[in-house]
Image 1 (cartoon, helix red, strand yellow):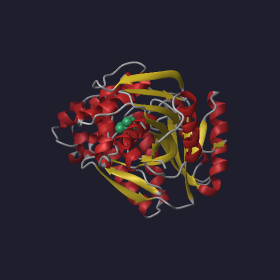
Image 2 (cartoon, rainbow, N blue to C red; image 1 turned 180 degrees about the vertical axis):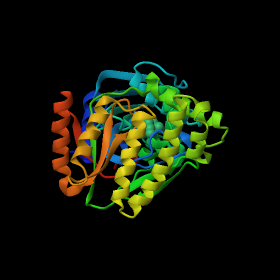
Image 3 (cartoon, rainbow, N blue to C red; image 1 turned 120 degrees about the vertical axis):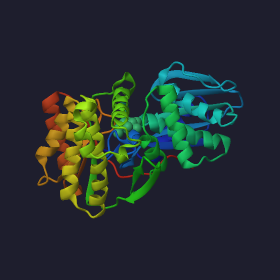
Length: 392
Ligand code: GLA
C-alpha cells in the first residue's frame, strides 16, 4: 500500500526524453521544485501565524533549452498540446489554465525588467495534483528556477518565493499565503521550514530522527481552491480582525475572541477561534517536536484537525474518515499524530508515526479507507527534501 516515491534522477531522465520526443533533442536547463506537506499551522499563513511545512520528495521537473526565437513552446506529460507564448508581450491570463502558472511567473520576471528569450520546455510531475500538496506552487517555483537558468541570473530565494506567490494571486486567482512557495523554495533535506508569517522569515528546523516517518494519505477527493471556499475563509479572517480592531492576529488572544463572540457573529467568531488557537498550537508543536515530546504533539495535531473541521469548515467527509482511521490505530499502533494538511476541501492527511510501524499503518489506512468510501487512496512516506534547484 505504501507507494514508492519516484527518484528525482529518473524524473530528470524522463523529462529529458519527453523534451526530445516532443520538442528539442537536448535539455540544457533542468529545474526541479518540490511539493510540500504541512505538519501543523493551517490557514494561518495569511493571518501572521506560524506554519511548519517541509518540502516533500515529490517534484515538478522542467527540462528545456533556449530556442533562438521570441516564443516559449511548452508542453507536459499530461498534455498533447504545445502552448506557445509570445515573449515580446507582457504575459496575461489565457487558456489553457495550467499554463497560467508559467505565464504568471514569466510576467514576474518581465515586471522586474528581464527580457525572457524564447525557450522550449517539457514538464513532468510526481506530485499528485489537487491533493493539497502544492503542485501549483511547485510548478511556479520550478518555472522561476528554470528562468533563472535561462537568464543566467539568481534571485534572492525570498524574492523568488514572493514572485511565485504573486503569480498564484494574479494568474490563478487564489489569494494564498506564503507557506507553499516558501516551502518549495527554501526546503532542505532533514529540515522543516518553520515560517513566521508576520516577519516572513523562514527558519530551518532539524527533522532527522530516523524513528519518525511522515505518511501522506491522498483521499483522491480533489479540491479547487479557486472556486471561492479559500477566498471566503480568508475574507472571514480579515473581517474578524477588523471587528476586533487589531492590527495583527498575533495581538489577539483567545479571551478577546470569546469576549467579542456575539459581535463577531457566526461564522466569523468560529473562524477567529481557529486562527488564534492554531497559532498557539503551532508554537507549542514546534517546541514539543524540538524536545521529542510526542505525547504533547499528537493531541495538538488532533485539535488542529478538529478546529479545521468544526470551526474553519475546510475539511470534508473523506478527510475526516482518513483521520478517524489513523486515530483508531492510535499511539499503541504507532500513530503519533494525524490531521488534514493544506488548503482542505479534499486533498490529503498527514500522519506522523513510528517508522517501524509505518508500512503496517499505511496498509490499514489504505484498506479501511477503501472499505469506508470505495475509493483507493494513494499513500506514501516523505522525508524533508531539497527545495527548488537547477539539476546538473
Ligand atoms: C493553501 C495555500 C496556503 C495556505 C494553505 C492552508 O495551500 O496556498 O497559502 O493558506 O492552503 O494552510
